[in-house]
Length: 145
Image (cartoon, rainbow, N blue to C red; front, side, top):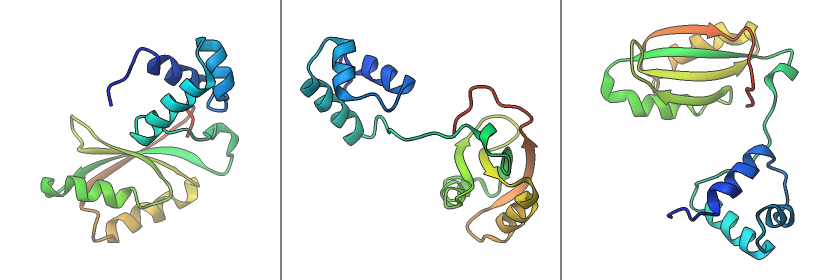
C-alpha cells in the first residue's frame, strides 16, 4: 500500500495518542470520520501500523530492561534464532545488527531471573548463541514497552 498525504499525519497523531478517536482525528485533520476510519483500517490491515497500549518500564519496580548482545553461530541460523528468541514472553524486540554482535534483544525481566533466562537460552536447541553479553538499563528516557 502506498501512503497518501493523509496517512503520515494520521500515523503521527496516533503515535502521540493511540487512544484518539476517529472523530477527533477527523476534526484535527479536517476530514470526515469515515475517511479516517477507512485509512486507519487500511494501515492496520496492511500491517503498516499497530495500535497498542505501552508500559512505562519505570513503573515496574520488579522488572528491569536489559539488552542482550548475541553472536550467532553458525551465521546461517540467524533468522531461526531470532524467531526462537521472540517465543519468550520476556523478549520485547529482537534486531539483526552490524558490528561486533549479530543480534540485539531487548528483554524486560526481573533482574534476579536474568541468569536463569540466559541459562534457558543456552539449553534451547533452536537458539544458536556462541557468545552473549548483557547490558542493564540504569535509566531510560522516553522508553515505552
